[in-house]
Amino acid sequence: HVPSATEKHAPDQTARSRPTDTHGRPSIVWLRDDLRLADNPALRAAVDEGNPIVVLFVLDDSPLVARPRGGASRWWLHHSLTALAERIEERGARLILRRGDAAEEVQRLADEVDAGGVFWNRRYAEGERSQDGAVKKALRAAGRVAESFQGTLMYEPWTIARDDGQPYGVYSAFWRACAKAGTPREPVAEPQSLDGLEKRLHSDELASWELLPTKPDWATGLAEEWTPGERGAHERLRDFVGDRISRYSGQRDRPGAEASSRLSPHLRFGELSPFQVRTAVLDSREGAAENRSKFQAELGWREFNYSLLFHNPNLDSQNMRRNFDGFPWHPASSEVLERWQQGRTGIPLVDAGMRQLWTSGWMHNRVRMVVASFLIKNLLIDWREGEQWFWDTLVDADPANNAANWQWVAGSGVDSAPFFRVFNPVLQSQKFDPQGDYIRAWVPELADVPAKEIHEPRASGGLDLSEVGDYPEPMVDLKATRAEALDAFAEIKSH
Ligand code: FAD
Image (cartoon, rainbow, N blue to C red):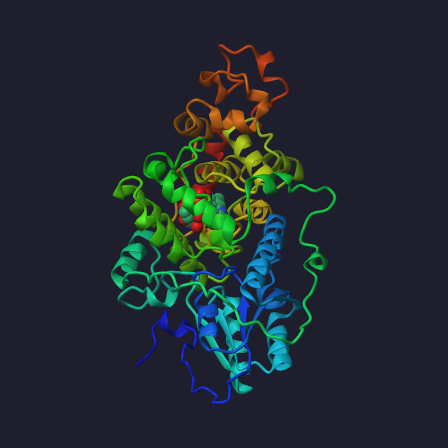
């Protein structure tokens, strides 16, 4: 049997013959992107061993997983770990925090407590997988159980392949293949109590990791909007399946409608699993079947993007379509970039989105597409500049979803919007925020501008310009820059 392209990447999932003397020796649960107790198969398996439990989180500085977390993610991580530590203590055990190269720290702790086994849920980026593989090998060589589980994706990338063994490049075919591959499992029950280890172990002070911003503290808007941790995640989920879902299919594209779930940061940090979300959505009595299937299809994009990341390790830095390597991007001058970042472009929908992002750490999906298109196709700035800004400012900044979506908007991804489809931010604004409610919420200078003019307040006609105060003129001509972008694209296409 010759392994196919997808199969040969699959991790070693064999449960090797177990050492017989694990009785009474602690089980370590190594948490990473799965900061939860419910539906956590690694935790469940560790508890089922019947030995004392140690839960470990490592702030990893290994070069294998080295992309530094952005500021908003660091803020989230701090609060999520705080919430998790409390929950673990309520259940009877302790969360141990360590910092360093995670592979070394896991083995160090395993030696320290003479662990019988170490358990974790799998990750999918290349560096993470090689780290996990190396840890598994070393633990087993030392006579310990080392087992990994499926907790973060409903369809692991190596299980979904075309007939010829190659990965899917197109979302719709990928998602159809997932449906054929079978129904995702039901969530795994949360252990009601954890038998913590008596021995006192060193744990870093979370504050010493300095994950929170100090001066200036830009996170007050984040704290108003979000409650990191499992409880906050379940509140959002209840709110979604009890109410918002009834508007999902019809209004999810409207940034002012509050129709999407806002579960993205909770999914990113694994405070909820996609299995839990799927089950809750299918059980929801609110709204029509089309809401449920539309929502599941969005979860499907998350699965697809992880499959892309799995097969394209440099998703955040390398154009999937290599002819984009020759694209004549404009130099990203700090002045131009800052106007975009700070929401002072003079295009109201773009500015509303960028200010929502800066203030709350999140932006509505439709507006993400519009601001990304504006950066790439009207300012002609390389998508990687935008990806980096989102990486730093989004609470849901995700290695697969962020990079894949930027490549989608740029047209440099495999299954993307074609480059020549340029969003017109004024038309998008008129269509998806017709009354201007979303714009008014985030751009106070335009609070008194009537709906008819708000999408293009400085266009000639009707409006008394004193009403828009110091709101800037559009920084570029949308039509001229669009034409320039299309010319540049024609150039790379011919190469
Ligand atoms: P809902 O509509 O309620 O969707 C439910 C869940 O499905 C989301 O929480 C998310 O996990 C998943 N999902 C929805 N849409 C997408 C999508 N297009 N691609 C992948 N997964 C999706 N999403 C991130 O989670 N992290 C990112 O870093 C990220 N960066 C993005 C960058 C750009 C330029 C664009 C256009 C989109 C990006 N997205 C990202 C996708 C999407 O915008 C967010 O997932 C969505 O807005 C989150 O809001 P929600 O939870 O209310 O979504």
